[in-house]
Image (cartoon, rainbow, N blue to C red; front, side, top):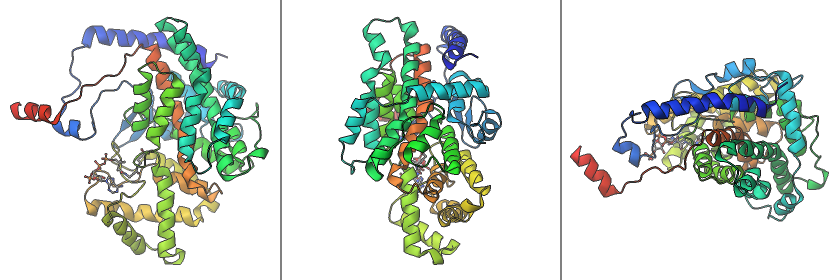
Length: 439
Ligand code: CMX
């Protein structure tokens, strides 16, 4: 069977030709008109990034190469004996636009496991950090330092031709994706558990099988399946979100994939983006504490929501820059719970469900957010919490293991398509005023 790299090599020429034709025949065609509101409003809705693997529709949510999450769940191979999408099959699909066979997926799992051990100097670096340093800070540092072995950087220094960059970016992408579980598990064990008993990477396990094992949850098959689904569906969310855009921007300077992804992780670590993951759990537990588990009703949740809003805080896990309906990733994670009685009985999961039943109305009445519906972060942490992975400051690290699939795919493609350094134009307030008043 063909490897991922061979398959990718076969699909690249057609895309290169498509780009060349667009450039030759349509370069000066307008895509849209930009308004003042967009320039002063965080560039919302400005269509300006080439990102091929996924597109986010405001109402339907994410599609990967045209397929919705349920459609991906139907066609992308799971682990042997499992049901949920394997991140390896999602990676293959994102990279090539083709659905891999079960054999190809297993072969990719094996290749990742072979690349998965951490170099000694990375272990020493991570072990030297204080356990009070936020896990996301540690993750970004580890990822950046892994560039010591960047194939892309070495190739660039040795004067490799531009048309060959993608193959070296691919090598880095694969090695980084392979090492994220061992790096992330080491951070977890150092901060919260005993590092000395961490198992080595098992060549017979898939990426998440190894991750769960190294975290210390390898015996929990349900948690392992949940993590597979979680990591597969958080993998890509088109190019405009802060982490994806950051990796694209930094990569465009020909910074290597490790440095580009480390930068993305620090965008993910902001509370309006991936850190919402930890914030939801912190906020839900504060609610449970304040109201008292026995007094949780729609009315008491409504009161707590208003208290959060009146104190000037955002309700974590709700709202979105693009989405205008419930996030299909939220729905997929809820459906995972719906088939498992132990999860349905969990007080934390029940609280998430009950909050969902009142929060959209409260946020609508509050009247500020354009989208009162839940995003993925509203649901993702409570299942981890139920299964005993309770250290919620760690949750965004799992998001970081996942988002590498999409960000690194696009870095490989950006090099394959020879995309230039990003350099949008900025304007001063006076410039904007001049343009607006003369229009
Ligand atoms: N709670 C309270 N107020 C909210 C809100 C929420 N959940 N979501 C948006 N608003 C407010 C905004 O803060 C903004 O207020 P100001 O006018 O005072 O600045 C107003 O509503 C309009 O915002 P918007 O256009 O609807 O939303 P944005 O595109 O500016 O922001 C997001 C999107 C996600 C940052 C915002 O909805 C938010 O802060 N949500 C809570 C944090 C969160 O869950 N983030 C995770 C998003 C998914 C991810 O990236 O992982």
